[in-house]
Image (tube, rainbow, N blue to C red):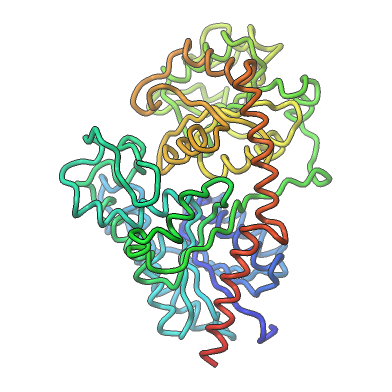
Length: 480
């Protein structure tokens, strides 16, 4: 190993949604900036997809070292009502001895330790080994600002945030409507709220800086506030680096034909609406029915990745064997698959999202607004119907529809009220047919080009990453 190059270790929380952003960051540092990278992946015994991904990377990668930290049984530390952030916080606290041992056993210790946002309590380990320490937030700058400022709001505001009629004011940012706060802020009596507040404090008190997966053309105002606003800087304190949008890269030459792509090949340019709510997104049976009616009434072509509805029985055959009209589950309108067979394709569980969003026949995307999906849609030049479900997706939906103007959204949050077929039909037509949809398609193509520019050799995100690396190199030289 070249002793002159920085050695960076990145800690990943359990779960594909946390592991993939860390791998993207590691790959960026290794392939574009030629650093030595070690991924310290805290893993559970239950995620086969996570294990398969790590196994493939361990086998194929020549420039990233993968160290798995298997998590022991912690069921005795969890309570039935504990929410996701609480689970993650407990998992990462219990993983600290394994992380420490892994670093101690390395032949060459890392120069820099980067913790993802849920593993910030591991940052003091860096002090034990004289390492620099940073936080990686694979979310929006608006989320990062709200998270770091939350302990101030906690002291200033009484009662539940969601009961407020007035928005939350963050210095330098547009006001945040109370209904759009991330999940941990929905209930201040839940333990995950306390973990979230602590996490935001950790960002600035335990780290030497914060890396955020965003870029100036997407969130210029929020990034400027984090870097320059005097009041917010008194809370954030450490340097902020906008290094995104880091996503999986689409390789046209490496893509393979399958029945989905073959179907898309037969559709007119920008005529298909892609509908997918991510690997963790589910709708109620009632909402699934209304969505089906809305798609049918819109008379637009669609490709729908459908998952079992939340809290209802499902037709197992439909989710394992196919989408024929005789296998239709009960929550789809009677005859739906038969009536829409010439304009729609319904796929159970999964579809190749990157290939779909980069296909010329796709003209819109109904998305849960996970940031990775948002960025993939923007890079593919596809405007969105924003349908946020959980986590920080409501914040992302606001950026998409109100700041960069590349999407529309229901009048009422889908998590508060079932979105009716009539409203769905109108949203689909707005996106796919009207002048408004045409403008959004133009906007998103420009924004997609700006995203690629930001990561290019002279781009803002590339320069920000270089600034981060230079800072690390200077600190390394001072410590020698």
